[in-house]
Length: 100
Image 1 (tube, one colour):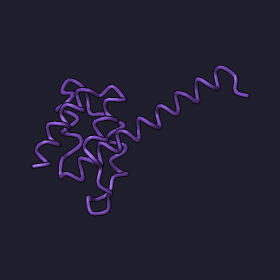
Image 2: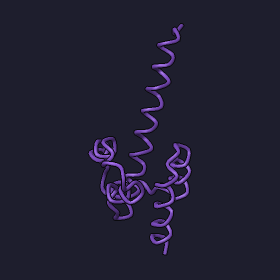
Image 3: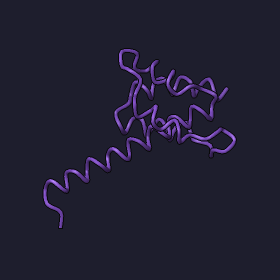
Image 4: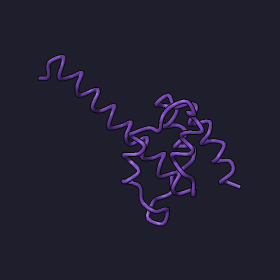
């Protein structure tokens, strides 16, 4: 049985892993749609430095040809679940352009 500290650490690690997956999903969606993830992120958060985790996950993205399609709505839901409403707004704007 986990003690309180171990349980809290496990919760933090789970959140961090899920956050990394969310950022990878965003980055891959950008790649799939011929967009630069870092540029899109900076558009949503112009006052923040480049997200180090975004830079880290970029090495795990694959070419659009090697990737499964990522549904725009799914990405928006995931971003909003993590409180990235500004990024979700920018992604939605680009998703509308990509759909046309």
